[in-house]
Amino acid sequence: MPCRQKKLVLEEKAYIEKNRIDVNRYAGVTDPVEVLKIMHTPRKYNPLENDLPYHTRAQVLYHQLTEPEFERLETYAITLIDNGDFDLAETILLSLVCFANSRIERGIETLFRKGRYNPSILYKDAGPAIRDELIHQVNCDSDNRNLLLLALAWIGDEEVIRLFTKWRDDPPPWASKLYVSPENYTYEAGWELDQYGRKRLLFHSKSYHIEVCGEGIGESELARSVVVALQTDDQECPWCKSRLTVLLDFKLQDPLIKFINLPGEQLRIAACVHCNCYGTVFMKVELDGSYSWSEYNSLPDFLQERVPDEESIWRTMRLSERLMGTFEGACWTLEAPVSQIGGHPAWIQDAEYPTCPCCSETMMFIGQIDMEQAADSEGIFYTFLCGSCLISAVNYQQT
Ligand SMILES: [Zn+2]
Ligand SMILES: [Zn+2]
Image (cartoon, rainbow, N blue to C red; front, side, top):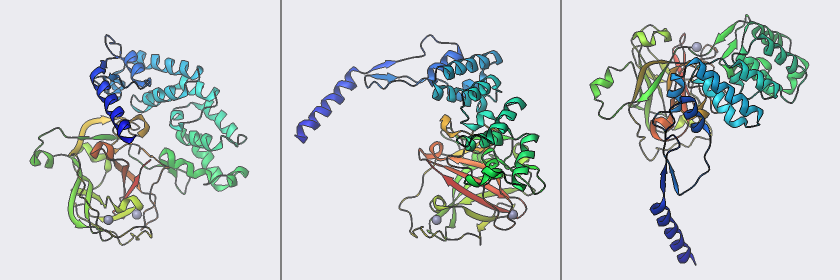
């Protein structure tokens, strides 16, 4: 029987290969809005059809859209919401917000009326009317309180800052039912309250992609790049004895990355890509590019001390000089590469800004490396810095 089954499988495979045809869903379609609608609409898998991809990525198409085209897509998403197709509407609205930096006021209004508060980043630009309704609801709607707090954190305007400060100083009765106190929801939107009740952003609003270099880039050309990603270094990880990896190497005085606002020439943020999967790894950094294993690292109990079997191989990556939107890499579910300097991080799990082990301040997000983009692997490495103590931190998350 196993033999016969194997034969049938091979026959079916041969039949598919012989009869499979190319299908171009975009043939004759030139309107970018229509192209995007096709692109976002899931296709039923048919082994006899080879679905040809469009020549331009969705993210790039969103960059090129005009104002009337944004509005048409927003209207389309609203129709989808009205018809109950939330998944597709969500992808379009997220793309409008993250890739095109559009304000989706009508979209927010529709989501709110339908009681949809997720993904909360969509509420980022909600106006005072929706904000006040969310505030009213958060006090009485225990089922949606989590999502309502996240939506408010994303709005993060003066009124919301005042409210979170009030909740911190005098917790509301419902706060005891939450897993974390209300003011901790702000981390998901990339900010925290300081001791005076002021908003402290935990990321830089300027942002640049880190892109995979084309074939044949020379060492000297790479050495001139403002930021280079993923280089294996000579230093050894004291835990697993494999070589450390410089995730990001910055030329600090280049005008492009002046926004990081550090004196000195060079910053290298390193990690052990093996041990980092078990928790945060800290390094002491100097602004001449040197770094050393931090005394604050503590060996995780569950980490096995062993030399990993194979050396990692990555694509060569460096900084793109095209300024990107602050939230462009904030959503890993949009399936666009999210390696970047600055901007809002793309948390796969909950937001996880490390606390500086020296001064106890929350550390600032500096950049992230998307391992799918770097090596067809998975997960994202997130890098952080305490500029006062000169300590870097690296976290890792995966699905
Ligand atoms: Zn290690
Ligand atoms: Zn510090």
